[in-house]
Length: 170
Image (cartoon, rainbow, N blue to C red):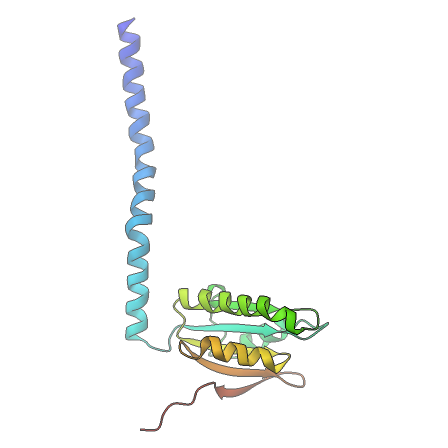
């Protein structure tokens, strides 16, 4: 009977050691991996400013969805076509906005801003379609963070209107 318990004890130890490996691996990745990735990301931003672009699309046109037009424009633009999905944010409304809708819109714009900053974006290509008040909200939210390049949905395509904030003269 003792041989059976000794054998079961050894099997239990072996299973415990096998299960300890993924647990330790997960602990290591959560504790140190995220810090290392963040540190590398920050170092890349320091070495190569303007090299981590992102895209923000604010679509407030009732009855239209400009996502396909933006994706088409980006796929044809050399500077925008390689921006990964993790650095793209999309804020859309399919109904006319009133003053009571502003708090939710502001929350969505802030969430998009936070997501882009968390992804290490240092230059935002901002595509706007809809009412101008949303552009003011985006300007207020992004004014002191990443450089913002403005695009407006015109007849049939997007037009680049340049940076939100012009560089200071030296």
